[in-house]
Image (tube, rainbow, N blue to C red):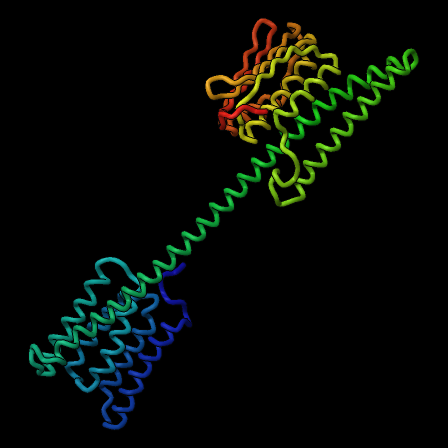
Amino acid sequence: MTLTPRPGSRWEVALDAAAVLAFLSELMRGATGGTYEGVVLVAAMLVAATWRRKFPASAAGAAIIASALVAGVPGAAIPVWVIAQVCIFSLTLRRYGAASVALPVLHACTLYVGGLVFLRLEPFDVVSLSLPVWTAAAASAGYALRSHNETISALRDKVAASAAAKDSEIQRRLGEERIRIARDLHDAVAHNIAIINVHSGAAEKALDQDRERAKESLEQVRAASRNVLRELQDILLILRSAGHRDDAGPIPSVEGIPALLESSRELGLAIDATIEPLPGVSPAGEAALYRAVQEALTNAHRHGNGRAHLVLSARDGSVVLTISNTYRLGRDRQGGYGLIGMRERAESAGGDLYTQDENGTFLLRVTLPAIKTKERK
């Protein structure tokens, strides 16, 4: 944003009008008196005023010279001084540095000395004192308008920076939301697809030999498929709505962990589980615990030896989830984003995640802060 009035603005029009009126008044006076020396001087000042936008310092220098030359044509003093003040105003409005101070001071001194020497005014006469004050007023008006423009420019920059920061924060939150949705999709679908995979294989083997068992396996496949569809519908609902997850559907909690254990046992995973009475945990913490159990059991079924050990307990004002399972050494255990998602969930809920993988045993521990002393019923 420019610190000067735009071409065609009210300030520029007013300044141009003042300069033109000063020239016309001197032209009429010269025509009436038949002398045109003053007209030539005022015309020269008018040309300088037209260049004040691009060369304000040069215009102010011309104003000082013209104010001194007024001594030869005292009758043209007022028109010359009016246009000179226009140039001084433009200088202080458009320029920084020593010139914006020195030239107005020099012009004020020129007017004061000219009034004393050529107009023969008294040193403390009102008119002689008003001449430098006039220049000071014009220069001060330029300074004030420049300061005002700078303030407006700073405010606009601040608003623009604030809007950019807000947009950046929105984009960051959108990115976090996409990651959260991706984690939800991974956690929910991976677990249920594992169930579908196991039971569909069992149904295929038992189809010709044990139709009742095949029917039970297909029912498990159907139930797992419904769970996947429901999870996908919840996620799609979140994507379509502008609300938060709290408004879109139930948040996973520790109340759903027993059902996860049961579904994993139906997959053939032997689980030794200990779930103690727990203090209160934040909704984000409950969701982190639920998803950690879901992901850990899915991985234990995929990569383990068919057995897992789970302990969910309260310890020193914290809730601690520990899950361990053994696996066959040498088996390909390429990981995906499950552990990354679990760690991010735990940290976002104010906790942490610890993993240990050695001697064929994988251990996962999630520690979250408790928010209440009252035990969960």
